[in-house]
Length: 91
Image (tube, rainbow, N blue to C red):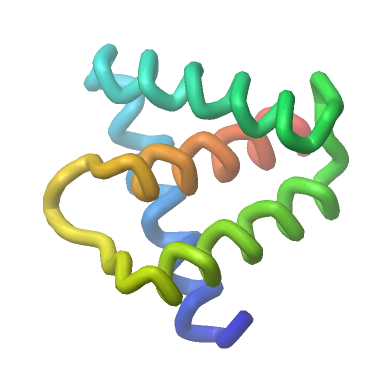
């Protein structure tokens, strides 16, 4: 993954995790995505390297499909926030 993409994903994740504290709807959506990522990876507490691999693959695929972060909380935004939250919780 390029450095630009890494920074963008990190910035989305950091902003989204911070926003969750005051946005119950976002927190609920992130919780659903966390469950889906755990199912996909196959672990309740996936290791950091598995989460990073998933995040890189997910972001690269989203960009190939033409996704770019906007001002709305779209599906991709919430998934990135969920993985970043998991990485913080598992640290």
